[in-house]
Amino acid sequence: MSVVTESSDESIREKTPAHSLAERVIFAAGLEPRRLKPRSAPGELARIAAHALRIGIPRELSDRDRRVLHDAEAAAPMTEGAPATDAFVLIALACAGWAATPERSLRDRDAALIACVALSLLVPLAARKPLLPRLADLATREGLCAASRAAAGNLSTGRETTEPELARVLADALERIDAG
Image (cartoon, rainbow, N blue to C red; front, side, top):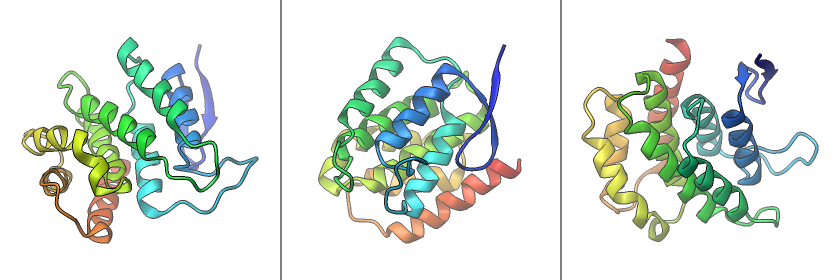
């Protein structure tokens, strides 16, 4: 039996253990404010990452994915306003794996790719190093959203990027997923 709950992005989602873990990670990493403990308003990239993560997380997590998300939750800073770099990198690595899994639906893979790119943009350039090969691989994956693949390819170079432009690209891609 599944329980239906309203998520903070005001859409109805089926509550699964994986989604419960995703919600805890989203709040712990500061991608969204907790309802009971408001934080400063998250930026556009954080909102995109949180929304895409809710769509892209698999219903069933492997033991490895569960460990990575638990590690991300543990890596989240305890101090409000502190950077969540390590948590974002771990979540982005999990999302990269989900986006690269051909057995998953294209919608879920595209959402995972969007979350991966948005999270990558949230970390300092030097901290993106472990993500660069994954982003380069995702940029070559035919079938995934072309705009999101291009954004992944742009980030995979390791050079500075124009975040507002990439945020618009990701927001448009996420809007197409929501519409479709």
